[in-house]
Length: 398
Image (cartoon, rainbow, N blue to C red; front, side, top):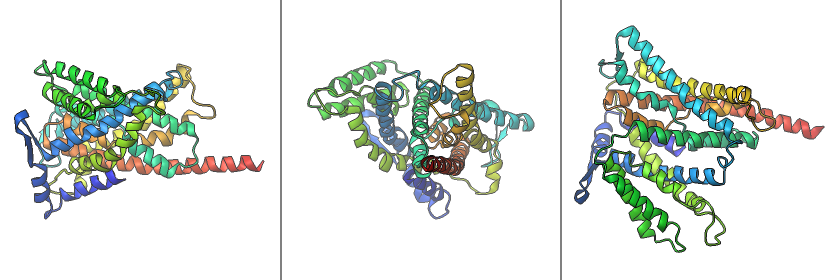
């Protein structure tokens, strides 16, 4: 919820007359590391630097799930894994269809901000924006409004969101990376090797670990791969099983230590600047933007539709099984929660569009679509939770 508050505050600060100049001045302030020729604005440091902490958390969580968690048994995880694919395909199709329809009618897609008309090819580059799920926010909604639902539904959401994160990482690496100066690939390999060696020592040399992490980040930045992915790589190289007779795995231990830093510092600061989109005039006309409508429809309708459709295909046609007692229709509230985009969706909006008008409208769509998805999921989860609670009470009465 801290991230949501930061996102709303950022949007307000960017659109109030007396706060916008200060907000813009802070966001565009350049912080440099001269000897590395790094010259990034505060906004870019939040997106490319601080967000790496979040992706380190994602990487550690992925390693744990792949090694000992829900993704270690591929057969048991088959339905949520296939559903996650559907939850990415359907939103992309709905988004592209929406903007294509608008382009067909008007001969292009008009920006509400300044009336400029963009081609379908330019706007369609944002197809990946509504494909991501914010796992932390989705689980927060689940914990608040679904106290009585079965553990199997929680596990389904956790597995689906984890695979969703993995697919999002692949999309960023493939579609939003422009490779150049290929020799920096050796820097990534060297940094990864140093991280893997250091993090497995009995007494971890944290200075070497920090240097390895920064070298991976800098090498990816110079190569043209989005540098936040260095966090994922570092997480995947961390041991997920106990070593040296330790009681718990290092991946789990580090995850619990770093997660608060991500949730309380990195994500709120990123959200504050990511949603700081300025519009000369705030009006209901924003909701007529084909880009905004496309993102909202993709998150609110496309996400749950794709998840439910592919769940049905995996259980009825491919003959995989849901946990005992669950049916495809029981997944609707959880599927609605997956329409909460936020973190990765904001990042993809920044990466997909070089035009500020399109990026701003896409991020506005993510903000509204995520809030709507959260509200719908909250209502559905509360009703489902109450139904399961009544069922449990009736069972005890008998």
